[in-house]
Length: 245
Ligand SMILES: NC(=O)c1ccc[n+]([C@@H]2O[C@H](COP(=O)([O-])OP(=O)(O)OC[C@H]3O[C@@H](n4cnc5c(N)ncnc54)[C@H](OP(=O)(O)O)[C@@H]3O)[C@@H](O)[C@H]2O)c1
Image (tube, rainbow, N blue to C red; front, side):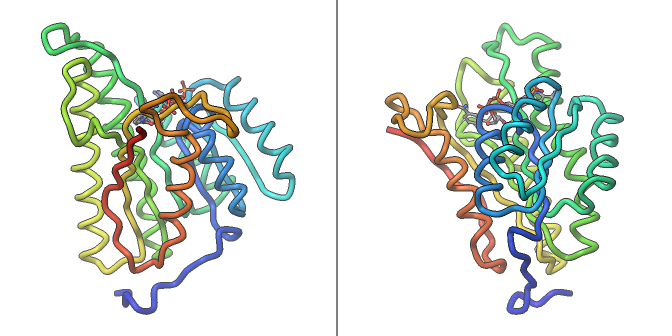
């Protein structure tokens, strides 16, 4: 059993990260920031091979001394989640930081919810995250080191009439994450689970221009991620709420 006062640490340079949905939007900016902060290896994974390849090539050009790899998978399909985990084992070894960022919304108000829309959202935002976490957690436990960062949402804290399935998935994600945190804390393990709960994020904003009114700049998500990962390892962070004005 680990002692809180002696929790071991690794420099970012020694760490590996897997970012789902790392080819676009928030995930892409997080991948960039992690490499900028010195992460040794970053694996980005999602469905669109072309998007992943373009992001991977561009990041590899910017950070030639570090390793950026990509893998095509659909988080809704269990066998593809297993393939991703096998690829990660072979290419980068144990995943030190898992960023569960893949996600989507299907805007169907309560009386218009379709089975397909409901399943798409819940399978992507919740069931897939559970599978990936379930498969990667044992490696973190075995080395007694790891971080799991879930990109949740303010829609995991408040209900919105236009996206009830999305809200259900993100509320569920927070509940799942709390259970995983309880599991590792009870065992005294050096594994942290943190949920980022942003309101609207301007994913199109370029580094120099301010975000649209009411939106967060996408770089705020990356800054918050690096801040969380930089904290002392005995700090138990829970949910971080963020909104623009
Ligand atoms: N933008 C916002 O205002 C906002 C606010 C709060 C929370 N969030 C959350 O932030 C996260 C990132 O969203 P974003 O705004 O950056 O939008 P985005 O660019 O559309 O990112 C979503 C990512 O998820 C991946 N993805 C979707 N379905 C997938 C599947 N079945 N399997 C594997 N990957 C899948 C997408 O890649 P592929 O299409 O290639 O699969 C994409 O890279 C999401 O979880 C979202 O709920 C966003």
